[in-house]
Image 1: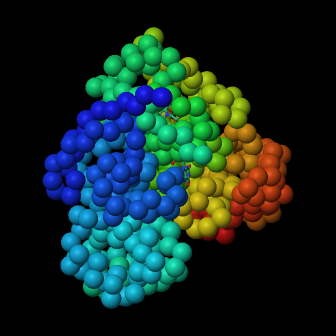
Image 2: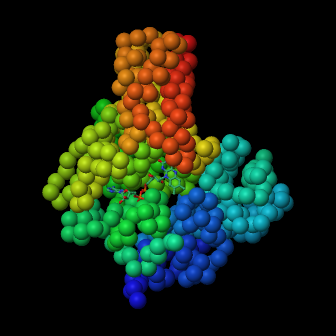
Image 3: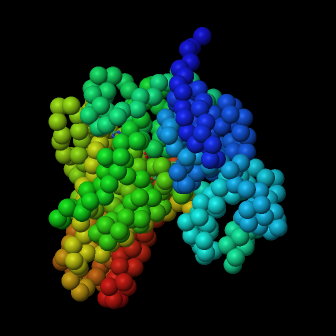
Length: 154
Length: 291
Ligand SMILES: Cc1cc2nc3c(=O)[nH]c(=O)nc-3n(C[C@H](O)[C@H](O)[C@H](O)COP(=O)(O)OP(=O)(O)OC[C@H]3O[C@@H](n4cnc5c(N)ncnc54)[C@H](O)[C@@H]3O)c2cc1C
C-alpha cells in the first residue's frame, strides 16, 4: 500500500471556520465533495476547462479543481452553498429559464456573483467575458446572459 | 487514468530564503505557483509525480514596479493583476492585451507570469509580448542571482537555461518609449478560453509613417517563440504603406517552422501568421493615422 500524507487545514467556508485533514496536494474540489460532503460544487473536467467547480477564494473566482489544499489555508472560500437561494441572481436564473440539466449552474452562478459584486451594472459583453470559462451544453448561453443582466436590473 | 496525489507532500515556505533553501536541498521537488499547468500535468501523468514547493503565498514576489525605463514584474503576479495594472497598461500595453486572453477569468486569477514563462509552451500568450519588449528574467538560488535574456532562456522545445535549484523571481521589460505602438494578436479555436493556434506581438517605433524600429514575435509556430527578424528588416527605415506591410508580413514565413497538431495544420499556421501580422500592422497604421 502506498502511504497517504495528511495535514490539517483551516479556512473559512461560507462564513464559518472549518478544519479538515486531507492530503496537501488534493484539490479543494476533492476535499469539498469527498471530505466535507459539500456537493453543490460540481466536478466536470477536473482540468480547468469547464468551470463547473468555480468557487471564490477571497472573493475571486477560481477553479476548485486546480487549487491545492495548501492554497486554501487561512483563506475565505465561498461555494454555491454560500449564496442565498433568494439572491436576485439565483431567482433570475430560475425565472429566465437559464437552468436546464443544471450541472453547470453552480459554477455559472458563482462566476456571475463575483462579476456583480465587482461590477453591479455590467454590459452584455462584460457578462460574456466573465463566464467565458464556464461551459454549458444545454442553454446556448443566451438565457444565462439574460439572467445575469436581469439580476443586474438591466 | 488520473494519477492520484494522496502521497505527494507540499511544502509551504515562509519566505523567499526558505524557498531557495528547500530547492537547494530537496532534489526533484517541483515549484507550484498557480498550479494551472502543473496540477493538470501531474494528474494526467504528463509530468512525473513529485513533492511540491508551494510558493503561491510568497507575497514578496507579487508586484509590478516602474523603475526608470524598466517594468519589473514579480514572478508570482497573476494575469488578472497584470491585465489591471495601470503601469502595465500604460508602459507595456502589448502585455496587458495578452494577459486578458489567458484562458478564462478563473485561469487569469491563478495563472502567474512566472508559471507561463517556465512552463515554456510555445503557445504561451505572455511570451510574444516579452520578446518584443526584450525581457530579461531574474533567477535566484542560494548561490546568488543571475539575469538571462528571454531569447537565451529558451534553448529549444521546453529546454530552459535554468537549474533545478533556481527560482524565477522577476520578469523585467523595457518600458514602451514615446513613438512606440504595438499590439498582441491571438488566434484560438474560439473567442474565449482557448489555447493559441498562432499568437504574436508587433511593436513599432514610428515617426509619422517612418518605421524607426520594429519588433515582431510569433508563438506556436516553432519549438520556441521566435522573433521574425526578416519581417522586422523589411519594415525598418521604410514608410508604413500597404505594399511594405505585405512584404513584411510575407517575410515572417522565413522565421517560422510550424507543425501539424490537434489545433491546426502547419499550412494553416503559415497562412494565419502572414495574415495576422499584416492585420496588426494595418491596425497600427490606422491608429496612428498614416493609412
Ligand atoms: C483551462 C486552461 C486554459 C489555459 N489557457 C491559457 C491561455 O489561453 N494562454 C496561456 O498562455 N496559457 C493558458 N493556460 C496555461 C496556464 O494557465 C499558464 O501557462 C499559467 O501562466 C501557468 O502559471 P501557473 O502559476 O499556474 O503555473 P504552475 O502550473 O504553478 O507552474 C507551471 C510550471 O512552471 C514552474 N514554475 C512556476 N513558477 C515558477 C517560478 N517562479 N520559478 C520556477 N519555476 C516555476 C512549475 O514548476 C511548473 O513546471 C491554460 C491552462 C488551463 C488549465
